[in-house]
Amino acid sequence: MRWVSITRSKSPPGPAWETVKRRNAWLYQEAERILRAYGNHPSFLLMPYGNEPGGPKQKEWLSQWVNHWKARDPRRLYTSGSGWPTIDENQYHVTPGPRGPSGWIGRDYANATKDFQVPVIVHEMAQWCVYPNFDEIAKYTGPLQARNFEIFRDSLAEHGMLEQWRDFVRASGKLQVLCYKEEIEAAMRTPGVSGVQLLDLHDFPGQGTALVGVLDAFWDSKGYVTPAQFRRFYNTTVPLARMAKRVWTSDETFRADLEVAHFGPGPLENAVASWKLIDTKGSLLARGELRPRACPWTAASPG
View 1 (cartoon, one colour):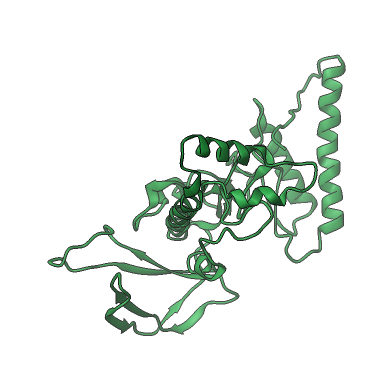
View 2 (cartoon, helix red, strand yellow):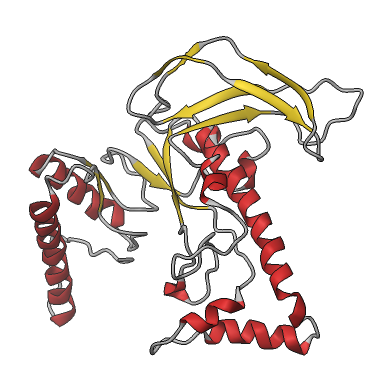
């Protein structure tokens, strides 16, 4: 839902305003039905108004909406919308601010979250595209057809490179996973970030061609990353490192600050982390073990 109606002290006459009033009423009625049907579900912890709201007075309308439901049903946390706005009434924010390459290579998005006093969820992170997998075309056996994939395929054939399409999928897919890893780890290093929304784990066909998933539109693997590999940087507990650069020469001493993002059921007590360095051939260069220490829950608020 990408629009929001507004209330006014004086309602202008005419059928258009009657439509606005009906929409306003429906939004509250629908929220009431959602809470009545799913309110006791243990995973129903967060509730936004909707996705990416718009309108000239969205903050005014959404402030009223958030305050109404906080008072009406305080069993969960409420926010104005997925994406924006970050209004004072929100109990958590969903914002696109803490994302993108600015936080990569050992950095974070602290500048984007430093002024927030409630937890932050990153909105639609990691919109990194991959080349289309032409094997997917055969999966469309109903009324929908993958005409967009056929355009890619025919264009590649016209340029004499059709036999390379699998190489394009694998190369772009490996790059996509590296970009996902960088961005997700940067978010986990950021104080106040309590989670991220991927635009999607699988390709999103809802607005044309958005090949942003490590899985295809049918939730099948594309073959360039395994679940175990993806969980190494997107999991309940993830080891993190802050380093100044990615390339080091033999006359330099490699240094990194180590951190842990932990969202498990409880803090880790006396956790022991081991490390190792291997070369491009897989040969072990060095290894070690850190002293035991506690790993608390990842902080939920920058305040």
